[in-house]
Image 1 (cartoon, one colour):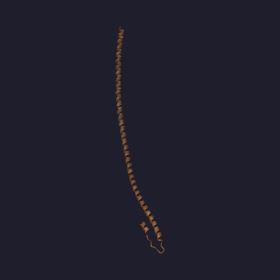
Image 2: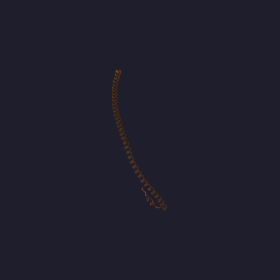
Image 3: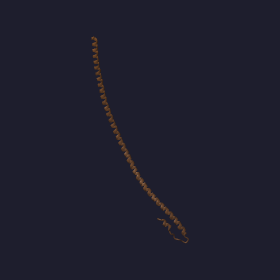
Image 4: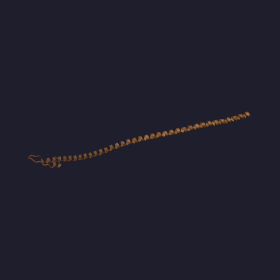
Length: 150
């Protein structure tokens, strides 16, 4: 049975021989109607609040879903960046090893060249000393001949 405050406020009762006082009943029914009106307003307000909260809940669930998708995407990007960084580090390591090998090869070639030059210098020195010795011995022989012939 759906009663409205108006139904309560204007409800009529049959009167009997020694029935209720109509004014007291009217006053009481008016108070009940006012309470009912307040409860109906409060109920309507609560319904609106529930609706707003349900909408807010739906919005937050959507935001949560978007946040979860963003976190998953960020994790995927982080994994990809890490893998890319590892590939780049490996490439840099290989390039550094190749550069090291090239430097070592060039250093070994330079060392061979310098050793060859040192060996040639030693040979030239020995040749020069030999020629100088021969020249000096020739001069010494000439000096001895000159001393012996005088």
